[in-house]
Length: 490
Image (spheres, rainbow, N blue to C red):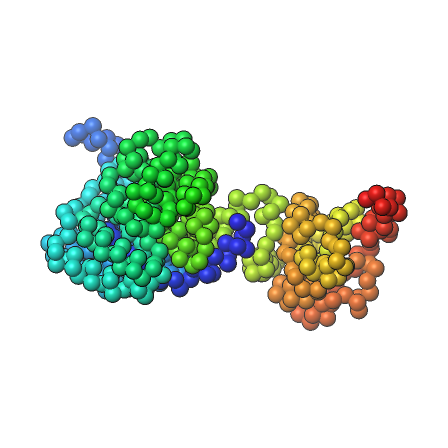
């Protein structure tokens, strides 16, 4: 998946309406230093330095969705306590519709308190009530869900076995969503996955799949067998099994795909499943196939496991992460908006930006000397590369000889080229207006009056530089010599 495709997806998911039904909770963190052992018992003493609280469980799913621009409706249960008020306030700050958040005075708001020393989790304290919801709370929750589901694009069931997703709530939600023809994705718990029968897709992790199936899920064959079994039990379209360091596997009808992990460092896996189901559902609800949704969910999960605590992946982090995973030359190839920001940053720091453009079909020594000389004029060289369609309009239907992606990667491998952008127009005028380079470079076979954009560059204080070209070295000359030498044999 290219960076441009990811940007398009991230743009399209904004504003999608997602209904999240499940167990909301508060994740508390107590951070401290460890410098001694207690004289009272052989245990470490944590000197508390700070404390913070985050949205957890289904509320973390919500946080991941809002972070990507979704409009979220939440159905869950909190207690009549301080933690419940905290959850409501934080969710409302994110623009979440919380009318479906039922207050049950007979239950505390689920809270997990983690004691951290030197970034390591030492202890977790759970304060919660796991009994099934009362009939009154269940009815109130279902009334909201049935009323709201028709106005949403997809439904997420986020189950943490805290008693909210009872058989009645699951059955009622799935039935309403299916009648409304909505995508339903469930993150399951427990051994009896038949409770989720009718969902579009289930997203268990490896351990959960093993417990539900009753056999180890290790090899690729095991994974496929488990996915098929769960798909059959649930009568679902798909099953997405997350595999930790091994990535994830998707069975969509009969198509089976294993997606390798993209995580570089793993600090904390808590909340990774929340990120997966949020991104996967959001992308799928925007009209993309499930394989595309799984790939982007895998990338987002690779980001959040590199953070401590329940976390989310922002659109910019996803884009930056994809760029960081490219090879060195590919990282030089930018979309225009990103390149514009990069150029502004360089100029703010006093750097001079040099710009040139061309087709660069069949790179030769004349090109390389020209680009090296251009780079010496400033602090970085930006190359505008004509797209394939642009080259055809300029050079004829038989050109280019080399595709734009290949030309871009070859140019980016040169040390003298710092950044590259592909453009589809016949001239680089739009690039020059957006980038505003300090120096515009063209070959010495041009006169200044013939250089497209010269007046524009000089109008804002830039200048035009003409660099001598190596005579007899051009793509057209090379093609002509090949034809003369080999004729009909080429």
